[in-house]
Length: 170
Image 1 (cartoon, rainbow, N blue to C red):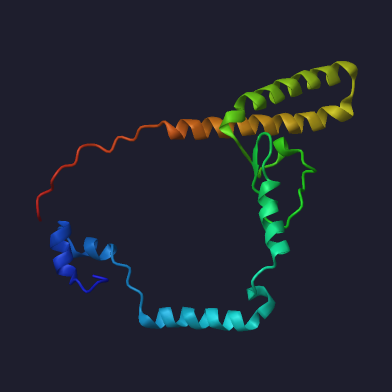
Image 2 (image 1 turned 90 degrees about the vertical axis):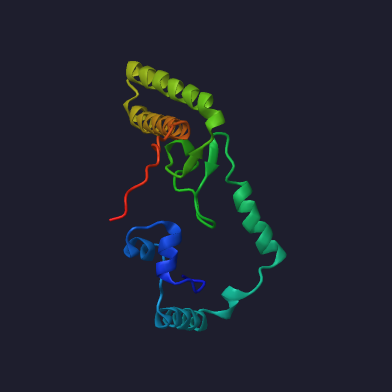
């Protein structure tokens, strides 16, 4: 269709009983829509400073690449955006932007268990000011473990696609 194949022939080749099924696979964009989008992009580029379209210097490029090197952590990878500061003061287990490494699951379990022990100690000693922070960290560690478990379960889940059957033409 996009290459000039008539839709009714594509229907026969695809084995569709209804031409509307075939047409659903054909993304048809009117020329006016494409041209309007191109004009919009051209206008946007003229409004933005030319400085944004220049080639970065070697120092800028190294700083950009260094950002990603500094995102590698013992528990996984920090997914915060380039040029943004850590809002959690590097308490990564609490941060939703930490993408835990499955190989570090054991380390996360140790952290969780240690936090449970520290909470028990703080309760026993009456360190009420410490308990709340430890509970936040514990919730973060447990969340990361659930995230890893969910990812692991979804990787090994078989999907039954069934046996294909032929329908009669209507």
